[in-house]
Image 1 (cartoon, helix red, strand yellow):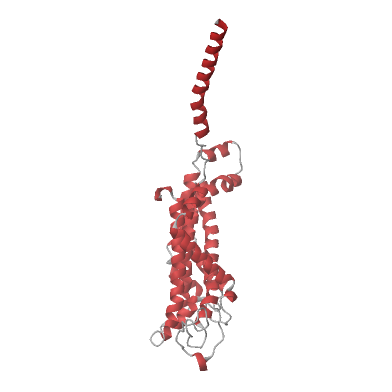
Image 2 (cartoon, helix red, strand yellow; image 1 turned 60 degrees about the vertical axis):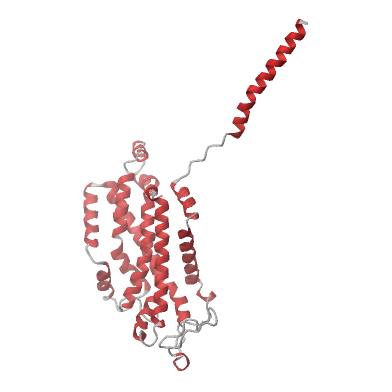
Length: 322
């Protein structure tokens, strides 16, 4: 009897231990796993994928890039073929999509639709080329000024102030009028010559903030070279505001190219460009306004797409905007 009583007590204790351990086991199974730490870029990408403004603008930009790279996929007509006898200021015909007469013909009998398709390349090349070059130049100047400080910062900041004091469009007019033949690379260099100052200011402010961080101080204490600190620690962490400003500015450079071409000092014939078509279409504004309106609308859509894209990127990369 004592042995049976002891065995029963032991089994009861074992059951109680099992019952007491069961909730702990259930909690351990149901406990959620901790989220992995996300970087600024992964967090921004997650927000961008949910932003309709970003999706619409990115889709438009992707379409424009495809049109600029492969215009032959969208039209078989040549933008330079002129037929004054049959197509002089012919009205748009919307009965067939993506046909040569969809947007009508200009004063020289050329297909406006074909010129819009082929003109995207010049405008996109100018905008992307200027943005890439001013971003590199402005980032280097701003990074050197912000990191080294002292006399380096003073000299580079005063140089930036001098260029910022020159009106952008007026300076571009003066520079471009000194060239007889204004190819695409000439327009790009003229806009880069005057357009790097904003990026330099933004880069300088971002670098001044980043260089005071603990990881930069630790890298200096460990004996890391200046080049390694700049390009391994400072630049990656100061890149977000630079990208935002560059993305928003890209649309402005496309508009600047169109404006300069309209004034007769930018791209010129035989280059096919939206700005060139806007310039030639102003002569037909009363008789055939569609000659001016179609390329103007394309410039507006492109600039608006890049502005929307830049706003979405800014909101995603700036924690204060969330």
